[in-house]
Length: 428
Ligand code: LLP
Image (cartoon, rainbow, N blue to C red; front, top):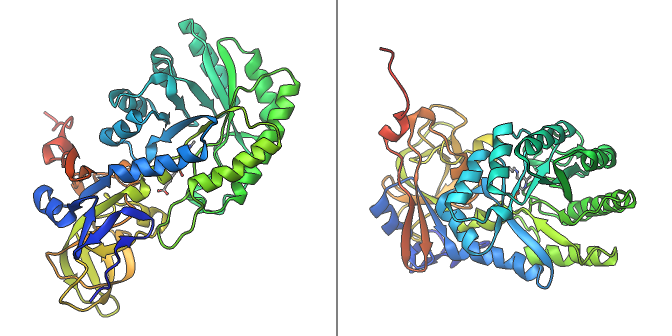
């Protein structure tokens, strides 16, 4: 018998009610029956409450929260944040079209990324985005020429690499010297001077982002000190920095992780900003995972239980194409049954998908009491799951449901085989 947790750690809108796992007021078994599996289910109220933690932290300050939409770029999710007044941090022309479709104000969009193309720059200037976060000197030159050719001025901030260790997985740490991101701290001043001299550009801000799934405050405090030192030296050359963008990166609780709450983190950071005389500036932040990660689960059916000599396998119908994080980063996602009580015993399983790769695992060494035909929920699946999903093994991408109290909105239909083959041709 499983013990019955009432709510799951870090996930107040996802809880067992009368033995049934629910997102807000809806039972996941009912949603699985109606919509099939694998199925992503998100809580709208969980997203809004994660956003409120940031808003509380910034009360009385000038701040633009730009949701880093790469975490989950489904239109129905973007719409929630657009309606709540958020801006967006984008990294491609495709993401730009998505946020516009979802009702975002272009002026609240900032454009990050090391490899922006001329076409992407043109489109962003045409619709009037708020700012380009420029990541190299070469990009400055190209943006200047694109803006000049259009008779426009591009607002820019330069992404500075503060060389701070965010103490997270190497694949998702971005602020160290060896990373491809940003301009080296030592080159920053010279890059600002170049930007100020180029036509078609308007230096607006400074920007940094040190990594993702950060669970400690110190890396943020260290990065902030380095950025503020730089702002001081840039401004002594007569270049005004109107906004400071601290990026995203705040972690969530996947497996007993204890990241600071967004408001607690920002109380600390704002105290430092005040102490250094920067408290009245315009701030921007780019949170992704911390707004959506624990607002979503992936519901999956147990297809087969396969006892083995060394391992027992629980084969589910979600796979690494739906949930790529374990295969890519050895990431942990909790896996729980949808019914808290079971008539069968708990067994240690490796939970795996149907894809023909040994890397297709979702969880290792998990104690689960499940039978074939029952369902499990893979938790913390709101961020970097659907947005990283693929069609590997010609598997259609899952459907997505946004729950708002007792209403289920289908925000993405299950991908069909015709959707998958669209645009392909046999040779005549
Ligand atoms: N701003 C910039 C410039 C970024 O590169 C990122 C994430 C963010 C904001 C948002 O970071 P967040 O608040 O979500 O940590 N696929 C990986 C995470 C990659 C993060 C990439 N950049 C994962 O599944 O863990």
